[in-house]
Image (tube, rainbow over all chains, first blue to last red; front, top):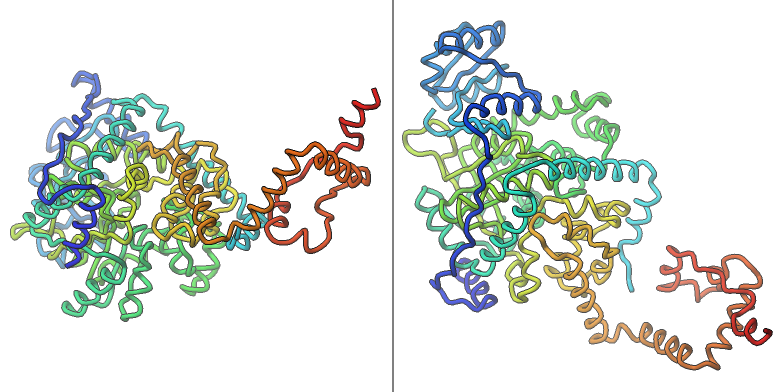
Length: 136
Length: 471
């Protein structure tokens, strides 16, 4: 009931009718960073370090696994189910757990020292990692 | 004019520690914002502000269309949308849902919309425990206070104040190291997240074309609130909707920079309904509550509806010389500072807190820093006119009118002006603060309030007229 009342109050205040389409939305503002691709990784590393993060450059999946091994040694860790982590051998490292059961995952995460994920995108200008959740 | 909050203002002004905390806290936010907007960004900061203003104007002018679009998309993604007129309807919905699901414990992330409707208090009356999980909000909830600032709710509290609250409420020996205080709160809240039945968040933006709820935060607590419990409820004002996903970057770039001076906040969550059948994470049920609570009243006036463009960054508070002196608790509602002075009278009527539109020096700093270009000084002037109209309508301005009529008569009559000048010079010749020493009852009421904050210049002992005659 409140739905109709609220929508009707809005339409009355704005002088609009139900189902009336709006005029065109202002054009989207899109102005990409004028950089070539070669600059992306150094820029991303610099942005992460400005945010007090640490970066490592792995030359192979095996190398990535070894870097993670050195970081999690002696710590309780939880890895996500991302295929890239599997390819790097990370779930089989000592001390690293991986769960698919919701309750077990929650309990493990609440006690973990380290969380290990992949990322879908890395944004060069801000140092942001984009993770799409739901599948991993 | 009646000034019911003078008590809070006076205690704030007299508290040197609070003044220091207020000045330092807002000063840090000003510095961070200045550095962030001064950086080279693409598009430019001014282009972003203009675009945000255009998008907000377009959305608000066609609000019913975008709300229905948003609703259809949320439903398509498995969520449910509930329209609520006020706080009572919101609380009734949540209490009913909690009863049906046997829920007792609710975790909440920071939300001014839920503060606006006193949601925690309403839920507690139904034996539901609602725990704030943003660190600042958690501290002020323990202290039994309301947010002091839109973005930094515990801006007014020192680490010693926090230590005292933790000792009193959590039984923890005095701990004054901020990092250790954070770990104490973290340990308590972690257990709450794991045990909670329902998570309640606000929403910074609602994207109509995808049905996404966007949460912007720095602590990760909103992400846990929306994903750990089996039920997620997002509560947002109807004005939070934007048309397209491609408009979102404009607002994300502006919000972080304007609020805390960050290019982006630490966590930006874009949520689209409950988890699907093949997914491990996320809530099993998702509800989006769209709240009116007076917002539709603001739509009536084509100029004033721009008040609904606000994205709650708090920049206008930080830059306001009045807010920086009187602080957040001197304002009568949860929205303080210039934006509070604009929206509170429009939500509750100008007669209720007629002093609010006057709580501004009209310096214009608020409009200069507003990321969506709300013309706050213009709105304040319009509301001042409303206050005057209201006073005339109700006859409350009789004394003021009489005062101005006497003043006008004196200023228009050379003879009366001369007598008044001679009177003033006679007092002036005694030296000192002559008007303040006026006897009771002349130094009471509105005149007393007015004089309490002003030093009047001493009248000349030898008047210009007398000097001119004696040449």
